[in-house]
Length: 142
Length: 116
Image (cartoon, rainbow over all chains, first blue to last red; front, side):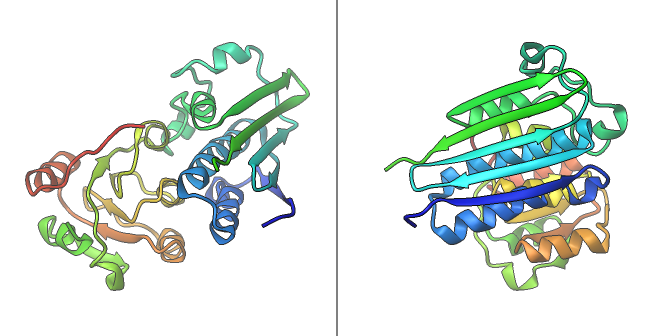
């Protein structure tokens, strides 16, 4: 591929069943484009974590993915309640997820730390009462 | 070890993926918390779990896993089976509990593999 590709997904907050469809779509696209499996894995795991977060905490949001031969950028933005203390939320094991989400296998407080672990760059901009934007990038080794 | 051998060891029913039983796998993990699978698992091809919802398949998909084993006789619904079929993931169900299932597979040579 020589040109950049932009993908946009609206992530529904209504149905936990469909959470992950955007990440699955990105995974499928990256596979078709022939990216390295490790790059694909890092992008899709981190995006999936973010997608789950948007469904759990923010009633959905939007995912925008820019794919180039050098790097893959993922921006997840929502209009949810925001994160009062981002540094606390970045700590492994810290979670505000309710019990019903834990019963579904999520809410262990590993989402944001995991997103940081799997990406080369990550930033979280959040305003309480306005929403949260997470930006992640994975560099493609050559 | 093949996925078919796993089914044999666990006396498991193949729910979907009969045509993929010759898939070779080297390691597995047993976990009911998908958050932890995403955080700690690395290159394991088999997921044993007692959790039954579509996010189990999504998690396996993101982790490039080839086979899901539902333990304790858990049976996935049609939506889960269809999603697994779309993702080329084999789905098994066994009446063995988690500890026993993991023990049987481990003692037969399937290992835990690395952590992420």
